[in-house]
Image (cartoon, rainbow, N blue to C red):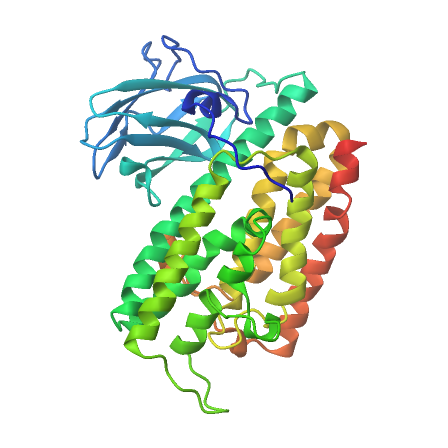
Length: 400
């Protein structure tokens, strides 16, 4: 992917440019499931994101958000996966109210607020849109659909890197303090944010190697920094004998990791992408799975490859779902095949998940890669290969 580092568009422009043809209007209203004329109200505080109803009928919905906290906040409507941003409103100052209008289709969603505009937010709550009986049509203008899909994904990338930086700071603090158990717990779940948007991160020249190079990737004389340098220190190999880093060395590598992640965050602010980059990004993410995660070559000391695996799959799925309207119009058969193959792969991966459904991001757990049998690895590999073939056709279908 090739990206440009441009200034971030105004928040209202990002909030308006979303997949479900949302519109930002100062006085718009919508019916709730109880038929309230004033729509849905949202109260955001430091630790709460209270929505006036948990259900609404499909069609135009208005969320009237009031910030009763003491920090600038954001409000998000997330897709069923809890990752893809369906719509958002940013930069809601203390005491300020803003409206978000969404032309919502029937389905399951989540609402969440983000006081301070960092981290994974507070008050995440399930939100259901029931069928009103009126068809919710996507925009008939193909370019408008492309613009919406691109803006939606750009917002998703920024959100994931925001959460990556927040988690990295916590991870680095635990590692520097010698709290290895906490650092080991945070290592795989924080990296999932990176893995979801890896093709974008890779577009920033030498920044991706500084963050994500494995020891096997190093050129002669190249300095080794980043996640995998610290991974080896947290899960030291016995053969050959490993010399642990000193407290001072730990601090140096931890600070560098935070600094490089901060640089990445600055780079993705206002990043501009194109339709082919989105489609090719989904393909690249599954290539990452096939070439590293399913083989156990990514996390050779920690054995946390399945967390990375899940992050890549989730990132690819977000991209495909964001292109849904365009793909349904151009190649509905391919869209259906991708849905089936994603579901099959996710079901196979879920067999090795040890945390309960609905677990928070930092509590997600899988078995160690070393616990997989050859049959387990083959089953995962077969599902990856089955998905990769139709996914490889997505760019041509969308641009054709």
